[in-house]
Figure 1 (tube, helix red, strand yellow):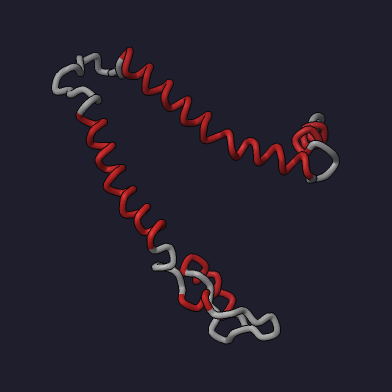
Figure 2 (cartoon, rainbow, N blue to C red; figure 1 turned 90 degrees about the vertical axis):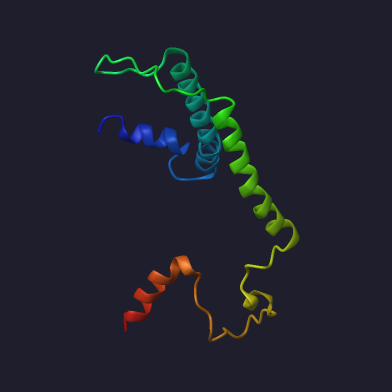
Length: 132
């Protein structure tokens, strides 16, 4: 209650949501994945250097294989096998998975009768149609 209004004005950059607010939240939205990736790398480095804690006290050094080169090669191969078809589809046939209705010329004076939302909005569309 005492610092709420001050905190809100500091986050917003003024008395209402405005350009500074959007700039700040865009910067946070952009930088947060890099911060999380950096903290993940620090975590993996520390885990690799010191090892994992075992509450039972049993040494867990048996049956281990090193991360590099085995898992590194496996992950790189998986990335390449997924990236090549995706890049091929995006670069050589970008309209292959698109709806053919997107290529009809737009008429601002008439709404087409066959419009339906994308598949991820169909649940909301069904709810809207069920309400009289």
